[in-house]
Image (spheres, protein in one colour):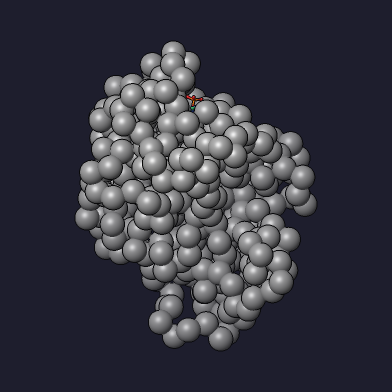
Length: 337
Ligand SMILES: NC(=O)c1ccc[n+]([C@@H]2O[C@H](COP(=O)([O-])OP(=O)(O)OC[C@H]3O[C@@H](n4cnc5c(N)ncnc54)[C@H](OP(=O)(O)O)[C@@H]3O)[C@@H](O)[C@H]2O)c1
Ligand SMILES: [Zn+2]
């Protein structure tokens, strides 16, 4: 096997470079992963266009095989094992920053593809504490997006206040949203999908949405009230302003779960929260262990990511499809290309 491997590094605002790197032995506590596939998540924007240190290899929806095991790694991880890595790169100790959820400034909790190199590469290195064991039945290329997009929706919905049968809305039908509709359906909810325009109406129904709300044609809060009010709305669109109108669509004690990241504030009147008993909560992806539960859940319920597949050399094109909102619905890099 060759000692060098290809990696795509983000070098500046939406600029990428394909480079050759030398393999090295994994440091203590880490494994070398021969990456087979990596999804392209909207959060990669933090690495590609955020105010971060570059160059960095983006990507945190990784599936591959262990190629080498570093010192001190638990004996249960062996060369050849199928593993995945999500956004949270595994933590060995706790520090003051991550105690407060300030992961971007945490000295210990690496964020895959954001504060450490990720999966737009044929090889990556990961802490064994962040590894996800991939169950038989999970497909390498098709299912890579489940490691972040899927997990994020799984965690957001499970921690919510909705019961089976209650109305749950998913705002934004992109990488996260198209999976969220399927998870909400599988959890037994009545599902409303909120998109911009009518282009995704039919696809939303195919994914399991009972209702479709076009936020360009009607106020989504009013539309949800007409449907009886949502127990939970999971907002995936990276648009804080668009989330403000969703609070009025919550039923009594309903909850807005925010997963889409945006610098724009969400505006809400205190009376809405008090009299409605509403809650607004953020939700951050999930841990490696939760990811293993997530993968088993997706297998049981035949939840699938709809992907456009690109070779590693076309990572820039894949990113562009994602960030422009054109991709249906997730771009995935296949390292065999
Ligand atoms: N909390 C977490 O742990 C976590 C994990 C992963 C990702 N994220 C964040 O979640 C967000 C979504 O990620 P993603 O990978 O799913 O992105 P994505 O694939 O780009 O999808 C976002 C979707 O939102 C839709 N959208 C944008 N503005 C909208 C609006 N005003 N109303 C309705 N829909 C709207 C877009 O569809 P149209 O353009 O077709 O309308 C797009 O399809 C990003 O901010 C990402 O950083 C958070
Ligand atoms: Zn992600």
